[in-house]
Image (tube, rainbow, N blue to C red):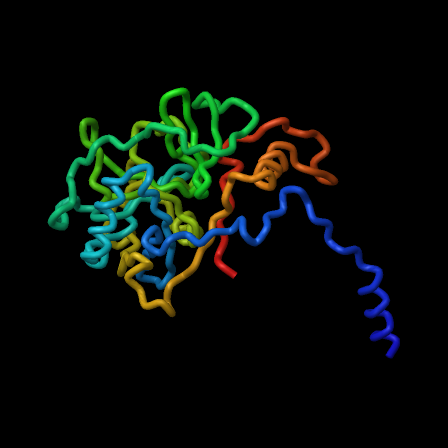
Length: 285
């Protein structure tokens, strides 16, 4: 009885969590379209999910969708490169597997696009661009007066390619698993972002060959399937939501990332790198 009374007293005395200006409303969360979600399954059963960015690299993303629909990654592909503090890369390590009919081997260089699609910006200039900010539909962006582009932040997915004029088909992909290599911006097509399961990539053994490539086949992590969520039965589809950026609550969220509140943070930073303030994505409740 005493324990029950004490619990009741504590419950009454517990402060109610304050609503912050940066807290989202339910309507601020929007479902990621199923055809923008691509789920890779590794041989050990672990999965990682990529959100595709068709607005920013339409031909590359169309290629990726064709490859997924044809189950191109389901046989003879793997994660074959793990370079510490840089990237995890996957696809066909032999580079001999034929592409699917209709896939454009070298699409246009979709490294930047005409803007603006940005609806909110960080307060400070970006080290690699005139500004950095956010699209309404949940993408980080950098830009200048003429163009915008997706930056190479942790978890962003790019298209591996040979030397220019190669642009890469989208069959060989990589994701950033270390410090943001922003010098790659506008030199490689960025086609999406790993929004779930990146720990299964970033924790793989580092490659011992040059640039982190695995020296022998047995070191690679085989891929057993890659499916667009739109092709899965409805009951099996993972659901994710992005937070829209065109409202005062998101602007307040930006300010909270640029100047972290105490008690731990005693000196405000006065700004933030876009890669340290990636737009929120969550699993749907």
